[in-house]
Length: 107
Image (tube, rainbow, N blue to C red):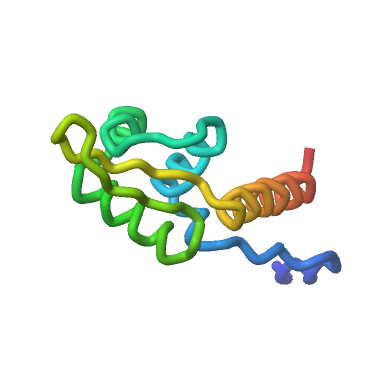
């Protein structure tokens, strides 16, 4: 049996590894539909542990995709997370890349 000849076509698009991680993709998708979300809300919605969510938020913040604000509300610490313009662009670019990959699949 001969190996299948290489098919010509466009190479797969580069996918942002920061966005591609399922936990971070979930966080970005949640933040895309709200102005901001607190840590507890994100934890409940994603099902991630405190440490896991904190690690993913740190990676997203380092990439410039989210902004994290820590403040006190009625003497209780509160962490708010907001999607940045770069984060929204990364999310929409990721969506476009996934659509491009899916369009290339056989029907």
